[in-house]
Length: 326
Image (tube, rainbow, N blue to C red; front, side, top):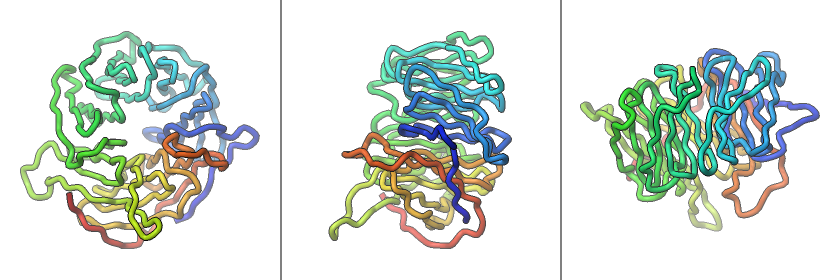
């Protein structure tokens, strides 16, 4: 695996990275950050294609398609960005920070979450509001869309919604009794994986009709410190779109580790980054893995290193193992 940091020239990312996402069908990488700028970087040409600044910190981003994207900001605003012109316009807002944004291509539906404890739905074609769920008991920590499934991590549980029936909800308690930090859909498996603040990952399936769909949990990021283990937050999880069951976790001490969900084996660990791993993204065919390393606002002290994004070309994977358990 080759590791290459992205070069942003004279205008580097100057504050924490909140999210990176590859485009649906190309090697364009969308980057949101606390420096109030949304960037689009083309990996094939190694060039920054779009740099759009707004008035607030950008806390999340996602693609609508190859030429448009959405962002959620600290002033509550939800924006749509034209990636061809660089222009943007406001779709709506939350009463507090807008923290999560996801897009459903199947429904042409934008879903946002905020610190106002609301989940809002927007028609991306007309930019009009089509619904709101305001029954969250606390703020959503993480949110994801896969097909018609909307999954929302709240506290120690995950709420699942059918986007065809916006008010249909099921709540699944995680294997873990600690707060969930991140959530990611299991590709083609009708389930999800969550990472916790104490370094554990749990895989959950909507249907457990066979032994291959039984959920489990394991501690994936235990770190030794002064002869004792201490807890390290799992900040992000991403599944490889081309190889079923392969996923990567990123933690608050700068480690990115790949796992095989089916064989329950640890595959490899990337070289440690000097900052926390805050976001991960595979490109559309799984040949590239982007790793964002920056201060995460969970650290007790800010670090001097500037935020960086490393690009890994996925080649041969060394083998390892891990044990699963609650």
